[in-house]
Image 1 (cartoon, rainbow, N blue to C red):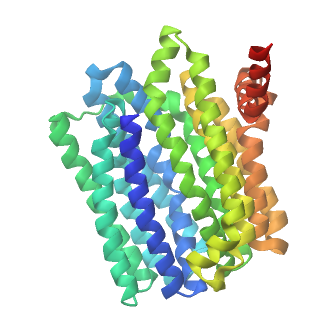
Image 2 (image 1 turned 135 degrees about the vertical axis):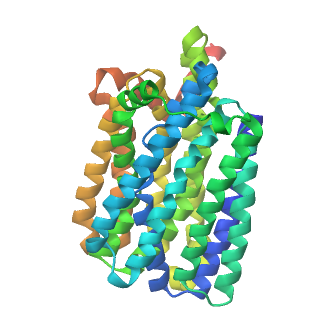
Length: 424
């Protein structure tokens, strides 16, 4: 819980400053400018699977179970992620001739190759495995807040998105350098990082499904904004991005909690001590925290949106009231992702994410032309529900997790039944 608390403090500070920055953008930029800015960021976000390569949780598990091989585990993971990020950058250089307006391509190319530094983020999982996330939290908070203040000052002085995105490039470079310095300080073996062909083959043999799953996941997380930009308008991208920002800010909570309890779940599985009970309790918490958040945000949206962004953004309200409910399935999905790794059935991560991505694409094609951002929000909600819950009942090996999630969804009925039994 201390580990989770550090991460929650970090996210609270960064998200708080991020909200202030977003509010500033709505006050100083036009809706079109904000839409174009969010469109470029959404395209860059599609590169995340290439720089992660599905290695994150695998590296964390390897460091927990084989800590004596830390140097080869980390060195091989960093090298593979750099190669993946480079491949993604080259691929998107080609795609940019169809997706990015000519005047924005030079800036987009700079962003593409700056994101190579994201590969060094694997060092975060060294500290996660050591249950020392306070180190990562402190590092990201310091770098994030410093550059957020710089960008905020520039926006208030009239800077456009070109300047802001160039500052973001320097932020990524600075964070990558700091990861290396901190790893050297704590592990004291930076020069001993080593490539190991056996380790690389092990990663690639285990993460193939996870890479494809990550691609599918980021597609149905960010493709909405890309499709809105190409099929509707920059304004609809701005409306949808603000609604998703208010929704997705909460998605960090399950990630933090599940990441902090992941080593304990691995040990419970190995020792067969209360494993299923721990899964059920954690899923109950995740599910009902998400439902409470969705209810509160749905009721507050008509007041919150104009208060934060101004009357120009009233169109964000219905988008937010739909999009926020996808969080119920996203919260439980965070546990599902780790469970699939613990049970060593990663291919179902691809199957569920892939089905969600396909459903999302089809619904976006049908709904965006007529309904814009509202249609994209409905596509997101339905695809998340199908991928992270309904689809689990199709396969025998994932059906038990579907039942576990169902028990979480009906927690009040379970509690009432237990109370009646105790009364009797």
